[in-house]
Amino acid sequence: MAMIADDNRGLRLAARYAVLVLIAVIFVFPLVFMVMSSLKPTQQLLEDSGNLRAFLPVGDISLSNYFAAFQRAPVASFVFNSVLVTGVTVILSLLVCSAAGFAFVFVHWKGRELFLSILLATLIVPFETIAIPLLLMVANLPWLGPEGVTWGWLNSYRVQIVPFIADALTIFLFVQYFKDLPGELIEAARVEGASWFQIYRRIVMPLSGPILATAAILKFLVMYNQYLWPLMVTQEEGYRPVMVGLQYFFQLNVAWGEVMAYLSLITVPVLAFYLYLQKAFIASIASTGVKG
Image (tube, one colour):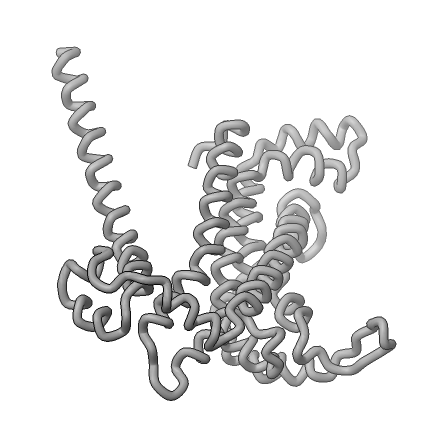
């Protein structure tokens, strides 16, 4: 009976890995197609798109599309802007939203349930409905800089960062995670005389590796793929992110090889960030013992 049970367990494990490999292959195919297409001339790219040659490095393979992409648009500037805006927003968002989630879960104050309900209700409001009022607001906000007080945040990094630091979804994720943490730790720390900030910094946050990684990935994807808001608030090329820069490749005649090369380049930061946080996510689960 033990041998039969071991065989069944091995079959289930093999079937599970087979399904995971199949899913991985399905998700990898578009990336392979994109990279292979970026190495081919546009005419060959279109001819190969209807068969398996689209996923193979065959034919006239070169890096000419990448050089052409850099000549058509300031790719390096676009990538730098997106990485800067996204990175700063993710860091500030994790700090602000985790602190807000901590206050909702552990700090007892009047009206917190009502306020949280109102906050979550904003999730159903599309960004497009508040984009114009928000644009009018930031266009008249003051800013203190080296040249003194100036009015208007347009054509700047701050206008792409500040409105997205705090959001209801990220706060909700932290609230749900903090609710599963053992309350005895918080009570013991309070008995020992620890302040709320000490509890937040020394107890809660060290145990929050999985939710920090999850919230960072979700926020990174949202910010890196921003198009509408940067298009509205940045008229200068020096502040535009990668998604706005994509429109440079659809002016006049579309060179699909250059488009694929540009998409391959701007995908690299996303993959690098995800792979880094995946390792951090697994390490944090192993160290805290949290089960997903």
